[in-house]
Image (cartoon, rainbow, N blue to C red; front, side, top):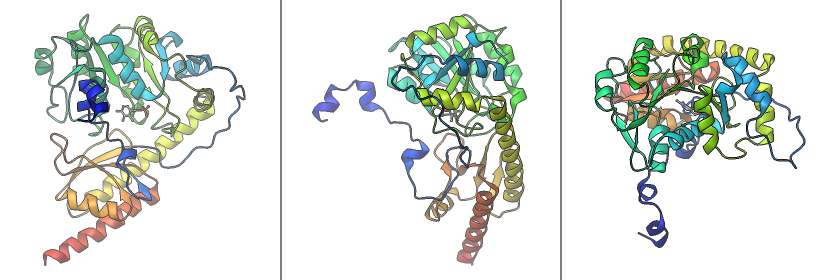
Length: 361
Ligand SMILES: *Cc1c(COP(=O)(O)O)cnc(C)c1O
């Protein structure tokens, strides 16, 4: 241990940082590993007042997002991506070294990274029956848990969590813990949102983002929806200026009527390409199973995923490897790219299947 390691907090010394798609690198020209929208949307900067500090919660962004989500402005918090929302929820509700968060793997990796960074324990209750909630096991683990994360639709598996189970979870946790519904992909299945449930549940928080369907992953802008008392608690721990002026400027444009119409157009395009990729993958040798998805990605189980992942990587087609996640042996996650990118992936998979076939002859 060097002297700096010796000075660091023990939990930070032990921490493995989040393996984001960007950190993993790769030398690709077909990027299907981070569930981004595949093409860039143009924006103009209109605010030229960078000598002034920005608003902590830019009013126009809050108002437009509340309109879009069908909630009241006091039920919206804007932050540096949904990832900051995850961190704020843990910081506001979990006592380090004492309380715990709970989540159901396989799921999004930032719940554990944020909890571990803050020094909060993680309880895991593996998903069952098509990656649904194991409610009795969650109930048995709930003592000391302050925040339960449920990702719906789930990343990386793509399916929605059964709404009856979400109701049961919200009843079980009433007065005991915050339930966080991560709706990063909700634009791809908008009728499944829990936003309409906020009136029933003071302990429900919903995470949203502009990174996926809004095609703005590089902007770093996300939202937490909850009732006012919960939002007020998060506002106590948020940075004084979480969003820069240009971010607020572009976010407001993305949430204009035209911005939302353009987003819906992109969603339709993505769903179209997803259907195409799903059908084509189903006809390929070496594909064991393509899982139903409500999102902008497909989880696919291959006969031998690891050499395939590497060979695609070598050809500049970068997917997300899920092989090491519990229950996802031989699975790769494929973001829905442009039609051309889907085609390039399918062509490469076809060539590799032919080659594999020749090698075994
Ligand atoms: C992408 C993603 C996020 C993070 O969104 P940002 O707004 O980019 O921080 C949160 N949750 C899930 C499930 C995601 O896939």
